[in-house]
Image (cartoon, rainbow, N blue to C red; front, side):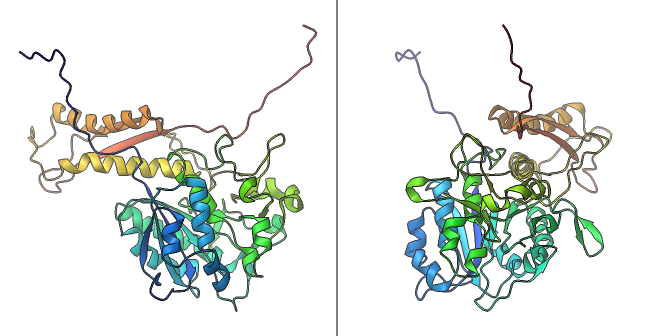
Length: 411
């Protein structure tokens, strides 16, 4: 019996499935700095000053005609300091396709990167070539980034990729439909790739001819880093891109270096085609990303299963995979009692509870709506030694538009 009356001890904290341990990545063409940042080496940043310590600052961008510090500073402007951003500089001769192998080294640094941006800073002599209204190297990069994301998923590091869609054509109605891509002669779904073709037009206007065609992938990545996995990077309440004090996004535009006002009539068309760019809302001051599009069609099958046709659905799937892997890993290699070679009901319930508890936690945090676990009692744990479990996760919804009717009433 204790004379203290009340005794409280700190409970044991379990595995983190909240997504707060997420990290982010940026890979892009650059130039080595003597004694500081080198090519093909991964560096961990927590704030813009960490990049400055590596010799990467605004002057670095100007001298080398690149947008590396720009993306880093914009990332932290939107995300806030303290978020882990792992970066890698590669030779400016690299295209998005050739960056993918180097990006594997970057994601292997911790395995915690949930989103990685590919910044395309071509060499000075580079000549823009358009295919279906897209920079030819950017268009080739879309399937390459999907293959890269598939590789990451296969190695238990699921993530989403963000591609800088630099230098789109001026005729927006002729742009390729990113939700109906054809690679070779077949349809191709790049549900793990988001193409950003928007820019801070005023900032871009002060750059070189090549620089004027860049897209602000760092800003987009920062919006993602500032919010939970399942949120829309275009969220109106929280993701205003404009900061008048910093002169940021006072004028939005596209990577063909056309102002928002110049391309306004075609924006609905390219929004439908899956491009990401800044927009305005009447009655509100500032710019916001239009949405969280991916380069894939919208698919719903007869069983009610849908594909990852928006970035927040891609994130939800990745978060669920990471969380479920964490809670099930301790079960690997454990002995399991069987009845007639099958899993008894109690064991099935035990395995189901592990997954459902993880889903309940995520639902309680507002990351998902619901989730369900179904363990196969016929799993062969004697020869194959594989436990088969089916998971279903219901994501949270998103209000993209509000439609209503309004009338003048006499009372």
